[in-house]
Length: 75
Image 1 (cartoon, rainbow, N blue to C red):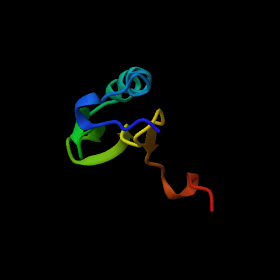
Image 2 (tube, rainbow, N blue to C red):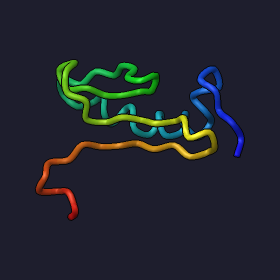
Image 3 (cartoon, rainbow, N blue to C red):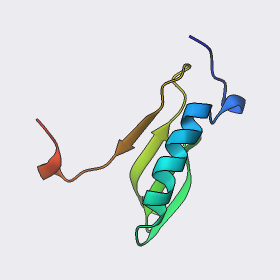
């Protein structure tokens, strides 16, 4: 594994994920993008986080977590 330090982020893979997710999220009403825990995140009305990126797995993996209503979650 290659170590990824905060000054090396976003990684190339992180840039790809950000360019794919960012425009979709920001086009939604009342959504803003800002950093949370050093990572790109999107909030509704600057309060409720509904999408968070994680580009700090110390390798080439990037995760994007989306909030979902409980009826959509698998058990």
